[in-house]
Length: 158
Image (cartoon, rainbow, N blue to C red; front, side):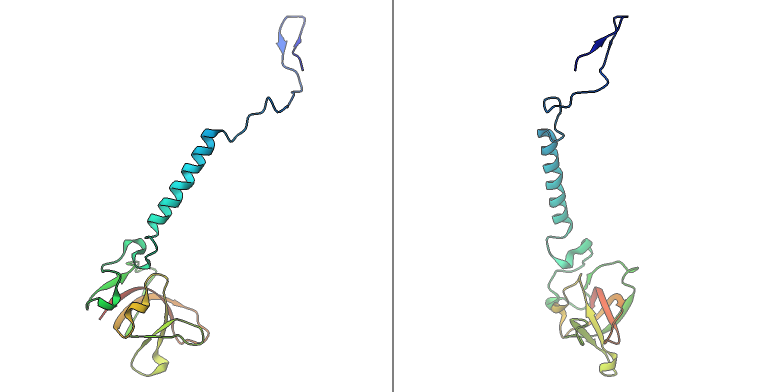
């Protein structure tokens, strides 16, 4: 469309514009694409570094011992320091096995099987503490079969 010239000599823009492909610019210029790739790469790398490189014992950097619980000395504390989330605590000897699909491990306490505490954990590798006398801090979960089901966030070797 061409511009119209009025009697007073002023050019006005046409009311309708021609939207052909030559006039449109892509939003994905090489600079924008490069920036998007860079942002994605930084996100992936920072997520990998924050995650602790797949080591569940290093979540949030809240460990005070190495990752091998089997050689952990008495008094060693491993796991989170978040006492607001993991406010429940219990002591006993860690054994393998849950009850009817609840928990992968359990703590044996005096008083028989009815006193067992069934445990799961996404933070600490409980398998490294089997047959050890430990104290755990965690969050009590609802259970169908277990008398006490806990998600463990911290362990102390007793």
